[in-house]
Every structure is written in structure tokens, then in C-alpha cells.
Amino acid sequence: MPGRKASEATRREQILKGAYEVALRRGIGGLTVRAVAAQAKLSHGLVHFHFKRKAQLVTALLDWVLATTTVLQIPAGVAQIPRGHDRLRALLRQEMGRLADEPRRFRLFLEYWALGTRHAAIRATISAELYRYRAAFRTMTEEMIRTAPTRYAGVTADGLAAVTVSFINGCAVQAMIDPAHFDLEQYLAAVDGIIGWVWGADQGDQVAVAARLASTSRR
Amino acid sequence: MPGRKASEATRREQILKGAYEVALRRGIGGLTVRAVAAQAKLSHGLVHFHFKRKAQLVTALLDWVLATTTVLQIPAGVAQIPRGHDRLRALLRQEMGRLADEPRRFRLFLEYWALGTRHAAIRATISAELYRYRAAFRTMTEEMIRTAPTRYAGVTADGLAAVTVSFINGCAVQAMIDPAHFDLEQYLAAVDGIIGWVWGADQGDQVAVAARLASTSRR
DNA sequence: GCGCATATTGACCAAGCGGCCAATACATAG
DNA sequence: CTATGTATTGGCCGCTTGGTCAATATGCGC
Image (cartoon, rainbow over all chains, first blue to last red):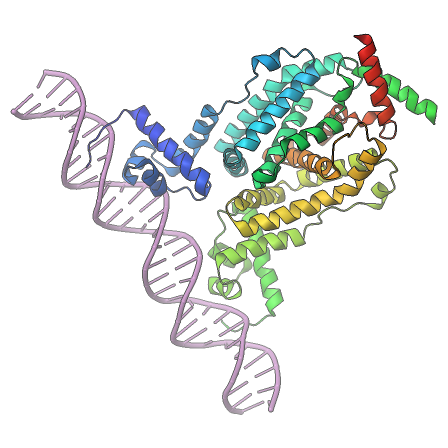
């Protein structure tokens, strides 16, 4: 029964939601116009009416996923944490937990990431998103460098943010393959161990100097 | 001209090599039996003769890639580094550099990783490989925990190895999307900053205690 | 030189794909 | 109530895909 009309925006949303569910189930490679239409309960012709080409649907889906994903929320409780290191640690926990909780969503994002290697438009979108995500950490990393210049000698805020993001991504990648057996608390404990913020960020520099003195005097 | 025979192993190798090149170029999703046959310069029928189903070819390709990739070489120079922290750092540099140098190979691995979410056999292979890779770091992380038990209180060697691997993977993921602009030295400098091993692993515990005392006495 | 097992080819098939389009149902303006 | 424009449908086309198979070339034991 043709003719049941809906507003342009509504239909696009409906189709994109269907596409999202199909992509979660079968991956981007398994995304077909007909499967999306079936999921959204409408004809495949209509999908082509709203998205002229399949490639348009794929890129629109990426935009939709990014738009409906809270990039990096900094809760009020976290924002009030005084020291940069502690704030960063709280955010690390939040983001790792968030990504580990939605392994399928992260997988979809990774698939787009890999796709970006071959498709310039997707690469641009992904790069921009990565830049935004990094930038969200920059105020924190700037503060860290400012309060411990010796420790972070020669390190830029961007570089430190990049490392932070790589930490989160690397965690999500491992959580993705086996979400059930991923132990966030164990993981965070190990992170705490390997990262030197047990010492406290504001005393970082003094401690670093003291430690190096102690180390040399011992030899 | 049919009939030109070759040994089973040789043909399989030839086909897998072709499959590898196609997968690097088009990704696993773009891998077709016909494209592989064309790349290997033989008929598509023959590919089906040696690999009954396409799925067999895909899994065999993963095995082949893993078999021909040096998982984790520990060079003699690195093995002689006395302190666990320093040795780990040298390995981090090596592995990050290695993965950043072969972004396409790592992308293929990531694609398999994502595929593993839906295919049990591939997931098993990937998980086993991840386990092997983690295990290669374990002797080092064990030593780190042994020499600094306070710092790594409640942390297992496996957990620490997992974090190390996630560091490497997260780095490779970011290097993959834009290999040309990835600055390994900047990245490693930031890693040095965020990780506390500037203090030295063997004095880690004493420093940690001293720092915590200093931190509390200051308040 | 002669079978015999087998590696190899290319034609063929059914299924599924993206994309196009005429027919049609609907909402709205007049 | 009618005309008009548009959303919607389903059939269709051309193409590619994975997979099968008869035909055939090839190497090898005898």
C-alpha cells in the first residue's frame, strides 16, 4: 500500500535507525539496502528515494552514529576534581567503561575506521571525530604539563591527549573481542600501577627530582 | 590450458599470497574468489578446488598472516637490558614502530578482529593470538611487579600485560588512519611522561612510599 | 606408450546485489 | 471534488557473486 507519507526527516531517521541495527548485526560489509528496508519495514525503493546511492546511506549512518553518541561528557562530579591527573583518571574509567559496555557500537566505529583507509570522505569524518575526542582531553593534559613541566619535558598537550585516547581505544579493542571476560577493575588497577599518578600530579616534579637524586646517589 | 600441475602446498601458498594482496587492497569485505584468482593468475575454479568454500579461504588467510608475522621478537640488545621497565619501554618502541610501519597489515588484522565478533572460529584464532602476544610480555610484567610490589599492589602480571598490549594497539589504531602524520617520537615522549618509569623500576617502591609521605605531610 | 588419478579450466547456474522506473496511493491546495 | 505534486511500492534489469561440474590437459607408475 503505497502513499503513506511521512516527513522527510522522520523517514530518514527511521531508515538510519534500521541501518544502524543491521550494521550492528552484520557489520558494514553485510549492510544491504534491502536488509535496511526490511528492518525499517518499508520497501527498498524508498530507501533509494531518500538516499540516492548506497554510499550516501553508509556515510549518513556514520554521521548519525557520531551525532547520537555522546562524544565525551564530563560529569559535574568529575569536573570538580581539583588535580588534572585525578580528573583524567576518572575520565579514563568512565570512557573505558562506556566503550566496554557497548562493544558492538565500538566495533561499528572500528569498521568505519578501517573503511576510512580506503574512502577519503569517511576518513575525513573519522579524523575530525578523533580530533574532537582528543581536544576534549586537551585542557586536562595542558594542566598536567603545566603542573609538572619536568616530568612532561618536550611533550605537547596534543601528544599527551593522543596517548590518552590510544589508551582508551586499546582497552576498548580488547574488551570488544570478549566483553564477558573483560574485567574493568583489574584493568584500571594495572593502569594505576603503570601510570605514575599515585604520586600525585602537583608534587610530580619535586618527586621526580627527588627520585632521580636518590637513584643516582645509590649507584 | 588446464593440467599444469603444482604441488598442493605450492598452490595453496600462491593462492593465499594473492588473497593477502587483495585483502590489503580491498579489505576482507572486498575479498572475492575471482579477484584472488586473478591476482594469483589462475582460474577461479582452481581456488574452489583447493579451498572448498570461501570461508575456508578467509580463515586460512588469517592463519597464514599470523604464521608469516613475527609475533614478538625480542632482539638480543633488548634482552640484555637489566631493568624490567626499560626493557618494556624498548619493546614498546619496537612494537609501535613495527605496527605504525605496516598500517595496512594492522588494518587487515583489525578487520579480522571485528569479524571475530560474529564468527566463532575467527574469534578463537584471534583470541589465541592475543593471548600469545600478551604472554610474550608476561615475564617482563612479572619482574616489574616483583621489583615494585607496592606500586603494583593487587595487579596481576596478566593484567599488566593486557594494559601494555592495549597501549600498543591503541597506538597502532591511531597511526593507521593517518600514517604519514604519525610522529612516533612525539608519541613515545608522551608515553614516557605519563608512565612513571623515569623514576626507575627498582627504586619504584621506595619512591612511591616517599612520595606518599611527602604528599600527606604537605596537607 | 598407455591408462589412471588428479590438477585445471571455463561455462554455467541460482541468488543476491544496487539501481531505475512506471504505476499508484496519499496529502494538500484550489 | 478535483488537480497537482510527492511519497511509496514492487517489478525489473544488468551485474557480480559463490559454487558446481563436465571436459580436458598433465604427470606418473607401469
